[in-house]
Length: 178
Image 1 (cartoon, rainbow, N blue to C red):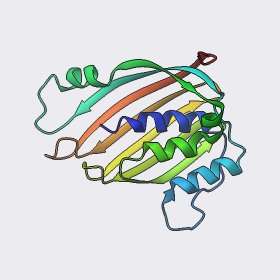
Image 2 (cartoon, rainbow, N blue to C red):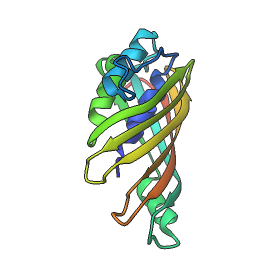
Image 3 (cartoon, rainbow, N blue to C red):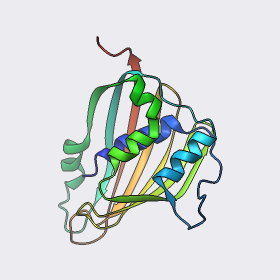
């Protein structure tokens, strides 16, 4: 369920480093391209290439008609730890590349604030078979790690509004295997 958003959130946290007003066209929303341009203009920190360990933890899940143990069931689906290699080319592309691969539908930001290593943003995605999904991102990161809390609200079950909150942590653990 929009699992690529986890990767986007982590990349945003790794990239955050003080951004100017990103709504350059003044239309009231911030496109992925405007967010990327804002980060680049601010001299944003990019993640270092290397081997990373990522962990995802589901904190809460609420949906209409969901059984009482829905959070526990969803934790079994989302709670995991995995490793991945970030190549020098992927690290250089940073947010831009991850944003392209993270979209499952049409996404833009309502707000996008990066200050130092902290980020606070609200993204709205439509399409992807789930209607409108509102994602609040709050976290921090640097060149080798990030921690992000994501709260999502939308129609998860096709029966009405629901919500899900999760945290992601990414940490560089060394060089990529040869």
